[in-house]
Length: 376
Image (cartoon, rainbow, N blue to C red; front, side, top):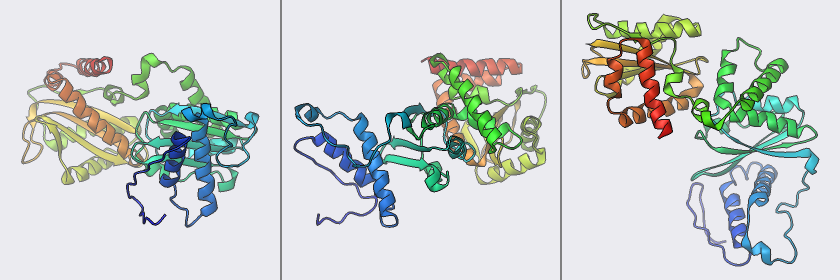
């Protein structure tokens, strides 16, 4: 009680006695989730109590077997009846973005209920977010700022007469997050209307219905599935400048996503002037952020005669151009790591791609390499 703890300190917590597993777990949740207490004591207490209740419902302490009287609910708050509370789980297959996140409170508003989303991040503790009538169907935007990795397990609690419907709908969206995010970006408008919300829920339900564990790699797309149109495979007797190569790759993106080639080139060259990415000798990656679409798309070009890329790199034969929406930068960072893993794991892949005679040969080679890692 006399210690002085500051935000961010690492504290060692030791508990002994009866129910020490449960007590230590509850105390850990309290200590890690006191943020905002000074500004909103009641709100923080409610949030911490809800986290403890959620943990209590799935925690086993061996000492419970020795108790003659079962312990009371941790918070003392009256919980909704079983008919009005629905609990489900989702393993997300994408990061939360500024396009897909606002749809969650809109779904909850559609069913006029309340919804909690909880999850635990390694080294950061438990997080809990709520949306409902009390906060005008909004959700704390700080959830986007968290580094929530693909594959995290989220607990979804829908509360109210239609809480079950809302919980299932939100679970379907989170479970198929990258498909839903891409579907939303492809719409011309009206995605936040009641019709748009209804259409999204139908789409997510269809994705969930057709999902299969045998095709998990599709749920978290491989690099080959993000390719825009065909590959630009050029002959060895044709010379390219860096600008000509970038323009060739930008054209593929512009045609598919209704972008201006000049605008794509401007943004790519702005990034290139700050940082040249050559992950391997002879292989360069150009990238840029667009306003909303594409979510993330890749075009490839093969230049057997070589391109002088910069004063440090004068023989680039393989180029990838990656465009992504501004709010999906972390998704691009994930794929940049995928590039590194893929080319390190398949040492001869780069040479085989450069030797491709057709676009189909290139895609087949890339796909086979990625599948070999998935199966491995």
